[in-house]
Image 1: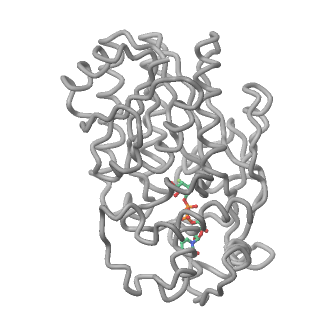
Image 2 (image 1 turned 90 degrees about the vertical axis):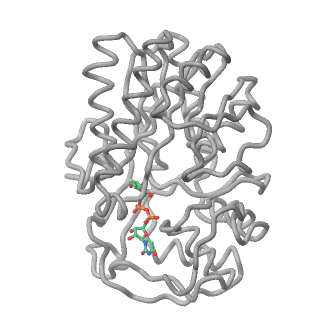
Length: 338
Ligand code: UFG
């Protein structure tokens, strides 16, 4: 298949692009490089473009005879979304709708859409299943939920677009080759922050909240290897090509780890110790987020390869050791921000 991958120069996008190419598909990366990295795209066709450039979108779809789209391109920082709601609604919602309009106009009827566990907000029970209430506690989650709703109510029902939405839990790790990995600016994610501290690039790690109702008082999350996430996109494409109905799936390991446990694992993997600073809770952070991922296992045959936290962190550590400054194309003052 010829697959247009928006945001294919980003963290999850670049891993999915690699997997698509390995599986014999042709990935056409479409990315504005506002967050992504040109160096993360190794051999695929690369088009630098915006989701708002309808003409370039149409031209790219036509020129490469696109069969399906995987739509990653979005802003994805929870904290930032609360400070810049307008940018998040514009980019994530309006940008997505613009892409879907181009797909409809050019007759591309297959889509895999990146969504997030953040659509659920504070869960009623654990593990979280797809049918539970959606009460996002942040703008990021609300923008993704808005797009999910537009897909179901408009693009699928009115235009017949077939889609699979994947709600990711906490992506981490890197491809075993060690040449692509996680590099955000600024970095806000737990695993890369800890590993930067292991490298001595940060003075330590702040633990956001130590008084949650969890065994060690710190937040519990479901960490999933980025290649296991990527693999699910290929299964979703195959399923849609085989006539699968439009649907929504959670993507997580179904196993929770506390912040303290993640730091322990990173220390064990790296052989270095990290200074832990106990801090207050971060606004909007639920205590426990664990995926119920039985549906995607059952219906699409997805099975994660990485279930051990140390194995997952080991792949990330390899990337960070070899690329202490990430891709080196975007600079932030690491200082003592964390
Ligand atoms: N944390 C710290 N210190 C830090 C950074 C994070 O203690 O310096 C804690 C957070 O409070 C949280 C956990 O580590 O409990 C994981 O935090 P991340 O920022 O790595 O990830 P989030 O769970 O906040 O968010 C991730 C994605 C979102 C997605 C969400 C869905 O980044 O895009 O998972 O669960 F919406």
